[in-house]
Length: 109
Image (cartoon, rainbow, N blue to C red):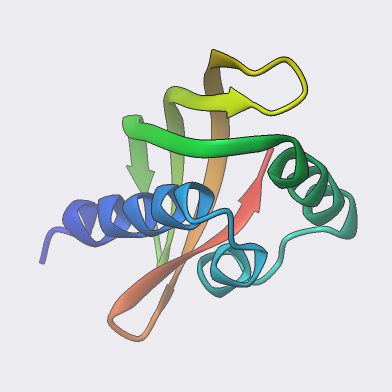
């Protein structure tokens, strides 16, 4: 069975959690999030509104129950301190681990 759709599903869950500005939803798909990453997201969520996250896998290598992916896209949001719409390009490498039928983010760097 091709794991790519399930891994793309995990990326879509991650994007939905960013759009919801929900740290608990981010932790559900990325349980190993570091304290520093959680703090960065909390600060970001305090400064923005109307977040849209468009993320796609540009490269994927699947191994024994794990996968490495290059994820890129954009975050678009209203910066509440400037009252301006901003667009931030995003690119990160993510490691995923199979958890039953689902894939979860193990690490983002």
